[in-house]
Structures are given as structure tokens and as C-alpha cells.
Image (cartoon, rainbow over all chains, first blue to last red; front, top):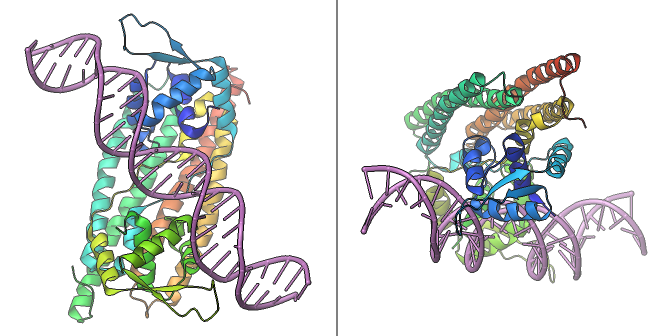
Length: 195
Length: 195
DNA sequence: CGTGGCATGTAAACGGTTACATGATTTA
DNA sequence: TAAATCATGTAACCGTTTACATGCCACG
């Protein structure tokens, strides 16, 4: 069984472009789906073996060198079918784990400064993210017409932008709100956790 | 070592309200942080034991019944300190795993109808989420003045609302975009994956 | 010749979910 | 007294990350 979603990521990437090694796949993930789906070597290499065993992919046996040299893979028709099958299944997102929100939720147990720092940190990350997304946006637009995947990639980027902008707008408000709260507490002498 | 973030969730909830059993904690999580942080019994009960061993919490030994009856816990001063310490550490979100975005990204490998269905599904979930968030918003507002945590809870809810609204707005656009794409492909007779 | 990047792989450990076992209490 | 729900726990399993081991190759 070529179980587990790692296999589908590999199939998806090989469907877009063949002749990739495990190493290539890792790098391809980093520079694209990595923002919403990460994979490590410890997952990729075993998955490749399983996919070969199920003949969803084939190894391009051209080991020109002697021993351990790059091994490239391509998707088979069976692999494509298997991928399409999975694509059609309703998605199921795993339970989210957002440490930022968790710490914010428990913010009342610490000084307001703690939460403020977290929100500012979050804002900073979101600003960087917006920069990155702008680059991706341009990259996909440039290669647009020749790429059947472009509309889908553009949509994922657009969602990223929309979410990040919303988070950033919220974050700027939140800093203001928390700063007011902090000032109010201090002036009214309310006892609150230090550190 | 009372490692792993499960412990902090427990400490946080017990800091807000003491005398909770493992069962209570599970339910409390479901109805609050559950939207961004889930925990199962398999994590909670072992964590409770570790926390007791480290005396970050204490068991309220009032087993009035004979054998296995509800065991409640409360946070200690040490536990509070440990929680505050963790709250002050910069957050680190684990790599996101968003199956929806993954399937959307690979949308070009299937028929447009597949992606459209996913986006509609996503929109539906977001609409339900907005309804839930509105309820939470009212609940926290009602008990606002007497609760020092209210500002923080309100902020987490507001972020949820902002993100969900942004996603929904995107989703409605996306359905339109993909529907156009579908129509265009069909009329121009471009070959594309079926099913 | 040495360093850094390319490349493949694996073992151990970890965090987490699932499914199951058990039994007490309440309510219909 | 049967069913539902409260309540506690654990063992098995799974997916994943981390750290490590290995070695090729190009370039300065």
C-alpha cells in the first residue's frame, strides 16, 4: 500500500515534472507546497520505495556512475490515476495546532507585555510572508500562459495573501488593544502577574 | 519532566478554573481551545500523572466512593510559575499541514469540477465556523467584566473571525474563477483529465 | 587537497490518535 | 433494568522528525 499523504505529494510533484530525485523532491517541496505541507527525507525515501513497489512511479535506471549516484523517478499512468483518485476524495484537515493562539488564549496568566510580544512576533512573520507571497505571485504570473497549473497555484497564493493580510490587520489592532489594556491596568493599580 | 505542550494546556485550563478531572479537561478543550489545539485522553491522563509527579498540580483526594471515581486536580504555585515561564517563551508553530491547499495546488491534475467541489466544501465549513464564532463572541462578552481573561479570549475569537471571513471571501471568488476556467476549457475543447 | 553542496538512506525517539477495557452513576 | 453518559486508563499503532552515517562530485 502506497499509503499516507507523503506519497500523494510525491505523485503530485512528479505529475507536474518528471525525472526528480528524492533530493529534488525535497527542494521542490521547500519552494512551493512547503508553506502548507512539509516533508522530511525520513518520509520521502521510504515513500519512494513503496511507490516503486506499487509501480506508481518508476526509477529512471541510468546509474552512469559506479555506486551511489542520483536516482530519478517518473510517474506512471497508474500513478497518475491513483493521484487523481485521491484528489477527488473530500479533503480532511487534521486538527490544527497553533501555539501562538494557545499562548494568546492564556495571556491573562502572564503580564500583558508577554502577549504583546507574541503578537508583534506574529506580525513580523506575517510581513515577511507577504513579501514571499508577492515573489511567488510574480513568478507564477511570468510563466502563466504555458502552464496549466497556473490558475490553481495563483489561487493558493491568493488565499495565502488574503489570510496573511487579515492576520496582519488583526495583529496591528491587537497590539493597540493590548497596549491600552496594559496602560489601564498599570494606572488603576490592578494586581497582575509579573515577568 | 512535565514535557510537551499537553501539560501546558492542562496547566492553563487549571489556572483559569481549578477542580477539573481529566474528563472535564477534555470537554473544556473541546469547547474552547479545541479550535486551534486538540488533545485526546491518551495524552491527557498520562500528562496528569506527570504533572502530579512534578507537583505542578495536586489531586484533590476526595474519593468518596469505593474505587474508580472522578479525580479532580488543581494547579499549584509551582505549576503557575511553570506555566508563566512557558508563556514567555517565543512561540513556535509546527509546520502546517493543510490538505485542502494541497489538493487545490494539484488541481490541474484533475478536472476543474474537483477543485470547485473542494472550495465549496471549504466555504461551507467556514460559514459554519463563522456561526460558531459569533456564539463564542456573545458568550465571552456576556461574562466580560468579571473575567480577566476576556480581552485575550476576545482577541483569539476576533482573529478567528478575521481569518474565516477572509477565507470565505476568497472562496467565493475562487468558485467563480474556477467555474469560468471550466467553461472556457470546455468551449475551446482543451483536453483535460476526467473524473 | 579540502570544503561545501549534492545525494541517499536509516534508526531511534517522539508525539499523537485510536481502539479497547473497565466500571460507576444517572435517567428513562 | 437497560441505555446513556460519566469517567479512567492503556496498548498498539502510525506518521514524523531528528540525528546520524555514508559517500560522490565540483570547485577553489
